Length: 221
Ligand SMILES: Nc1ncnc2c1ncn2[C@@H]1O[C@H](COP(=O)(O)OP(=O)(O)OP(=O)(O)O)[C@@H](O)[C@H]1O
Ligand SMILES: [Mg+2]
Image (cartoon, rainbow, N blue to C red; front, side, top):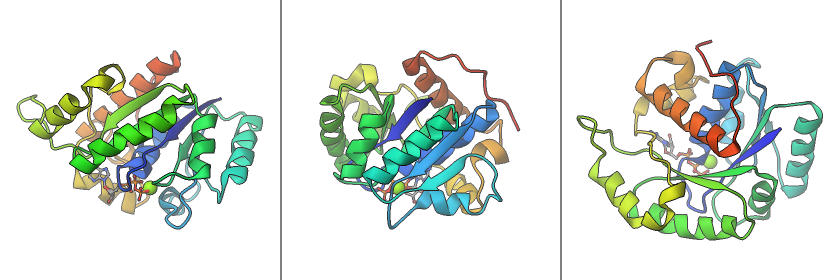
């Protein structure tokens, strides 16, 4: 079982959205994923899952680091293929535990200046563990004629030191994502051929590359 931890010190960076989008992708590849929601007080993923009549991924809400460790052990014992951990913003023991459990840490960031600054502190906290990580631009203005928005070019410029771990793709700012989530769906279920799903698939493949895994390719449900 691989553990993919979503982490960002910055609130609202896109951790929960990305956790849900990625987790749902595993069912399309006939793989079993457990999404562990550590964000006490919000439990975004848990609320989303409550509208899905038990459809995968399985979502488990935990309150602290000890519960998280038990949930990861349970997922492993139940032979899940992947465990995705959504963490709260800020520094917290549960996030430290989630990073320590990770095979890869995904760090979402929007293009705002505060997001760019927060990447540094998140990366520092991950680097001390030696875990591989990938920085993922989220809620990015759409490309025009195939060209990246200036906001993203600026983000790439400012994060040039992390060039090799800054995902070359983007998750674009689309209202339809939150409409899907509000209905207990994900873009891969509502519009498999759509632009958001293409981006999610590209990110999923990039994460598999880091993990050096070649699972069956996801396909429409
Ligand atoms: N690609 C996107 N397009 C449009 N809106 C997005 C996108 N990604 C995230 N958002 C929106 O940004 C807001 C914050 O996203 P999300 O809740 O995923 O962040 P978070 O990092 O989990 O926040 P928190 O730190 O509070 O847990 C939400 O309103 C979400 O709908
Ligand atoms: Mg969240």
